Image 1 (tube, rainbow, N blue to C red):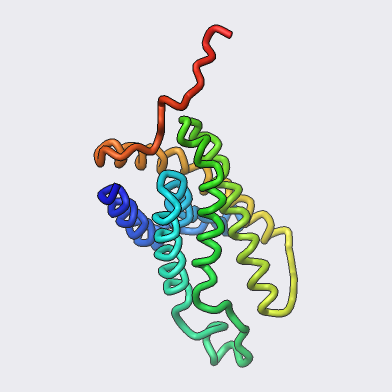
Image 2 (cartoon, helix red, strand yellow):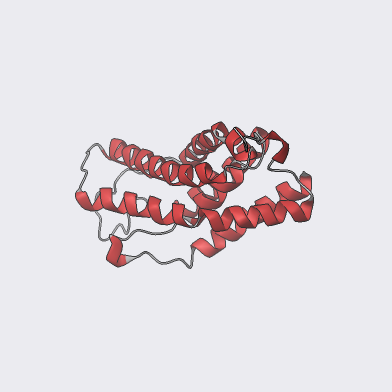
Length: 194
């Protein structure tokens, strides 16, 4: 259990590094693959609640540290009135909410139905991006929802969801190496001849 948790933490850190090299798809409304959120969501359904909360804290803390660097609102020479930004730590709550959403479907995942979890990763990323956008527009004091923003959120969610089977395969491989059980085959119902 401890080895699997440590390797999962290292996988999250590797996702932060790889995220820096993933470009935005300019032809698809600047959508991107959110690798950090994807690895967190896939890992959240394979671990218990305390480990998920630890992962949520690490991911949220590092995500805010990464995105919070630099002056608020951009270069002060260009932007004379800087826009208010979100406070440090909001991502920890968003990651925790996504993690609890994935924990809710954990019984299905443990029965071997990982496809529902893969679908839920796309829904969770969509909700994460929508909540983040709603918080940003609330802090800024104006709500402007354009078609390009909606398409960017939708395509980002879809692209991220498409890579979830690869991350689940990686987590299954890691769990077998660590002799950690994330799926209980004995819980499957046997309805072959009914």
